[in-house]
Image (cartoon, rainbow, N blue to C red; front, side, top):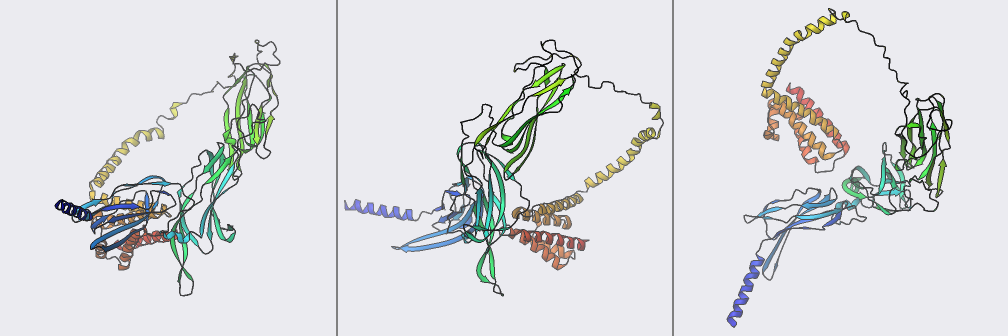
Length: 592
């Protein structure tokens, strides 16, 4: 029995030592669900040192910190414990389920991989909490606020949302971009254009030491009742924060940090329109309106036409309801109405006019009444329904055939039934059918200057076409020259793309770097695979280019590589563009 006991202990010790010697390499995230304005920390841990660590590509994220490397080791009961960690801080670019792919490392000749990790990114949260993020330095100095004009509107009553960015006097903002736009579910929405950003002084939560700019104005019309949520607007802001360091004059030096701010979600409680007193023909109009039915003429002859316009003017949800239909006598031929809108949207909502224009053509002599029609709307200020009537309009047809189907030719009947209209045969009498055409004397063209020119020009064009074809064939055969011309065109194109991308850091520096490369391809006759700073310096030196211009060109290339990963202002991007254009001009002159 003792022998079996000793064997069991020995097996247990061996299994423990084998387990302790097992190599592990795994990825751990600080959280698997976060808001788009939060940060994610991911650690790649291993219990034995390795080589050739390759991180994931982090698609869907921006790397805002890292890699940071930490190593720890300890001895416990004679056993060594080792841990090495690569840490990254990530900012999500969009909402949804994002996947962090595998990282790899080589340990003792074997390649180890981490598992794929899925992270769920939601809308911005109210209180992002990430103590490892340096951006919290600016958290007390910058705030994004959504101001709602009315949190308890009626259904289809206009409300406005104004987004303001507050910045304290001691802090500056050099740039920002929208990273998450609110989707106004269950609202009809329209953004109001803002021409230029105006800095204004104001207070934030009672603190007067703030400035603010209005970034966006949006008009909303709720389309459902109950509690509706307005999703938050989120920004990525480059904040200039004062440090404890000072310049030679005693002024504080500033440092730049990226900060993500969110306006937070807002809940709107939408009230139903009252059922009491609701008119029978109510079509959903909410606001303050005037209603009219206008005819272009009241007297005309048969087969002539007139226009009848049903029009609503005022302020309210003009695009969100239908106009009442015009009811006309059966003896009037009526075409489908043409709908017209003349609407402007400002902070108070939609204002203007909408109308339906009917074309009416009477066929018979007589008097035709257009019955009065009514338009109903809800006035949210008075909190009551209002109804406006148009009044009856009589159309007097002076000349034309009599309608023998009616017992009374003076007053035509009106009903809602469908009845075929008997045409008189002259309903298109107003259309002119006599064209007054005259024959053309063809003798003026024969043997004229125009005649001989049109005859001889094709023959003269043949030798020109042959010359053009030979030059084109020679140009196509010049493979080397075509490559140079193509690279030159690409350089000009990329430089123009860089100018268009000013303000978009990554796109700008990629386009600028491509422009510089293609310029060299055109001038030095080298391929992309041959590019290196030493090669460029050597070739430009051999072509007697000034050493200062060569150094400036190389420094621009190096700056393009670095600038994509460091905070850059719009002013610095513009300076880099002008510097690149100036350097290319200098080199181009010296190469000639």
